[in-house]
Image 1 (cartoon, rainbow, N blue to C red):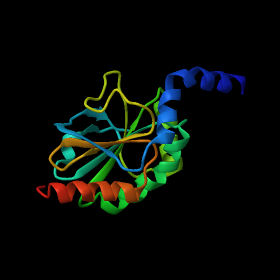
Image 2: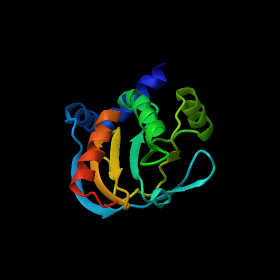
Image 3: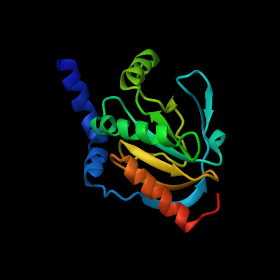
Length: 174
């Protein structure tokens, strides 16, 4: 128990500002200047996951960690959203942002019944998404592969859908 408390205490200065910011965030994702987004990372499934493999669909990229309580609260929202939309219009990609044993992460994903693909962040920053301001952080990539919005803090499936609709109305071209 002492080790856990010490580990959490050691992480507070690093993530404290981001966690505080997450508590203050509005529920409306912030638009960003559109820029192409691409990364390639090994998925827990063993396959290489490339962001571009989802061209033509919205990609919701969520940075999270198993120790992040707000992250845990939004997992069911991402599952519901992904399960409803992945066949046609949008997918969720979870980017685990912590040092964790792959076997432990696979166990966690199975326990949570996460249905969307999970990759682990590597040593190199995933541009244009990093550096992160805190966890959870969610990024919206439009069907043309452009990063167009971000959301710091927990998010709901309803907010994800509203954000996609807002951008679709502003730019209906697929």
